[in-house]
Image (cartoon, rainbow, N blue to C red; front, side, top):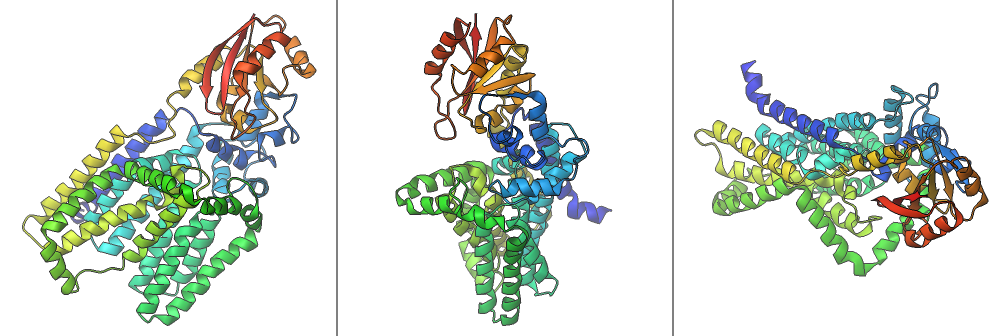
Length: 529
């Protein structure tokens, strides 16, 4: 017991602290990004990928009820574990289905329930597994439990790490599978074992079935391992490894051939979009600066520790050089780290939009680069008096540093403004509700949480629509009406509220309007008699 406590006590403490911080931020999460709503819809809607599919493919001049919205985001009774529906929805989307299958399984245990906790609990479990793999990977590479615990603290409490967990999307599973692939290749470098090859092939298949951006790190780490194996004259392992990796890719084509349609489509997330961004050389600098900034801010504690380590390494440079000459230092970890750097550059250039989620899966590999610096320092200093106490103090320092930045730079996807939006929607929920959109489901999806407060709402593009008149006629005694206006030029209709609101007043019985709130793609107003 005493020996186990000495070995794993720090690790258990760090995991408890990370789990507590995850729970705290999960409780503070008040809203969802549009893509998170898509996660619920694509996973749980019965053969209806998007909200317009719920209404037969068009939203124009139609009424949508609260139950329609709930049917989209929840598993209905008797429709649990509907993997065929998930597969169909993802064929019509732009992503592969693995995470959505897992999400559908989680949702099937609580049918007819729409809750953030369905996604957060699933993500938390996957996130904890990712941290375990990170610990094992760092320990495998550098042989130090203390170093591995520091890596877990730096990533698990980082802005990027916590944001990955809090975003109810496939990126947390992508991160787990990225780390698992790195771990399996680290095992292969340690000693080629026959059972590792099919596991690597399976891992590549599962990664590609999670998110296509897995391909970048997977390709470059596979290439790095092949170079490593050829330098070591391990020709047979190199051949078997290559076949296993290619089989993993081949399984994607067999089990999800729609990936080819996704690759060559003209959608925002597609191969065509990636090539378009690749050709836009003038944007390279802006994109690279953005993603470097995201990585620097998102791994603030790791960056600060890196600066400190560089100072210490310069102080002990002579000992490091001597350790290198003595053959103490190993460069195997570069097979894991360098591919992340190359992937970072590629993703920075071709990502569909400037959003940090496209580098979430390689963020922990950058923390492993910090672990490499710690390893250099450990090996150069060798054994010294009171090393146990000093190393535990280093863990404590890294943990406090990570906690400080978790407090100062909270993660994304909390949406603290949503309670106010919900309050305003609930206040006027008995009034008629109109959604002005030119048959676009995107803004309605973003506003779904507030629209759930209304029994129904009517969707129209034209203020002079006779169907709109018929809808409002049902509420002739109402002195007010809530109006959502789809104002996004890039994503949908691009209506101008200042132009549309006077038109609505002119064609209805209302005399004035006042703003309620703005929510990204749309703005909400109150028409008053």
